[in-house]
Image (cartoon, rainbow, N blue to C red; front, side, top):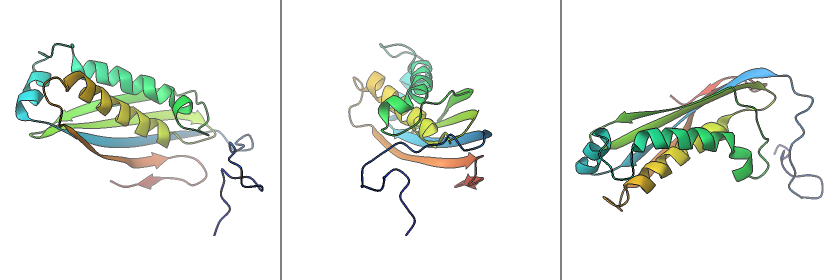
Length: 156
């Protein structure tokens, strides 16, 4: 079994030292889905929700969350992200959400992309719960990552 990177010799959690790593362009893509009734989906599409523009707010929330990932997830490094995007695709049964995070740096941006998707989906739920409380968030997953020592990976 390989040595755990976030555990020191005494078994205590610690932040990994990345200072010796090379800066490379790193990018990650993630997705998730929120299922909802057609009436709610149409209200979001028509921008007629009482709380305002659901998707615009969810996009901003996702981007902001990606920038704050190290404040939310223990042992994540604070990163100077160069790009974060959050996109939505309406389906017959809900909204697919995708996020991309990119930087040039010493560590990956997978957690930032996943945090962006998660927060965008939670924002959609929060802004829509008055119309439907039983929405379901599911399928949050990493789609791909590139850059760094471990190279490219894809689950698409």
